[in-house]
Image (cartoon, rainbow, N blue to C red; front, side):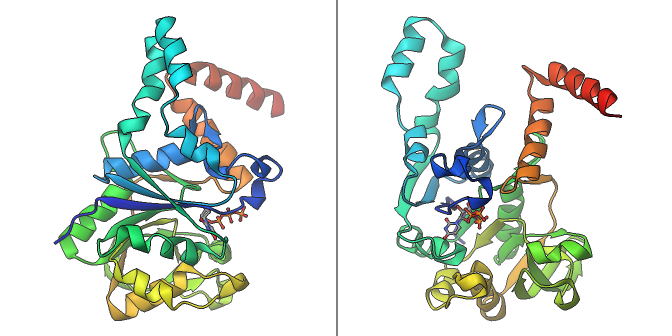
Length: 294
Ligand code: UTP
């Protein structure tokens, strides 16, 4: 059986919920404290054993590629000033993983973005991570992608992460119709994109972490524009589930929806409260303003 060495990370969307900043700065490059969203996502994939990152890019997203390049001037300056700790924060990036850029020429939807990777991924199974969903796991816990890879390795079936959401929240997510296999493992029968609560097949949502067999590309290839006129990943997943098999597992970890402003701010607060350099000062500040607000 093939192991997962490749991950696809789509980053070609317009990030309209973050305008005006996303006019020139890609949503994926917005920081959580001092690292871009995208780097946390890549770290999650690398922890799962991924070596090749296929980044789906769109127009004007040069800062993403630049971030993984050598920065000769900056590195030289830091070295001359003997700022080794600062140098270490950037130097590892160029060798951290292989970044392969693929251009999505038009932002026709997530399904189309994923399909753009098919020439690079070929017949290999791969992980798919949406970089505007950040998954925190403690250093001693497998990353969420690693949890999916372990399940894929054990059961040889495409596997997606799922989480239970409130009934009135289902219209924000792709929702799965399931047969329960055990308390944290489900067989996926159908996938519905952003259903109304009254039509939702369950309360189990898809928070942007997947491991797919390469057959997903065959189904995405023939997928027509669906909801909102976009080529939807979920439409391809329905075919995969019904013809090849698809399972969903609940996961250990804290998920942040950094694609919207509130989720992004919450993630920044939590990451600041974990950051060794500033956590005590941030905590003191939060306690101070909480007192003033109450
Ligand atoms: P989203 O729909 O959340 O991102 O797609 P968006 O379109 O950039 O954001 P808003 O809604 O306008 O604020 C989830 C992920 O899929 C990528 C996005 O970059 C994001 O990381 N994506 C989406 C593509 O790469 N191509 C697409 O055509 C659509």
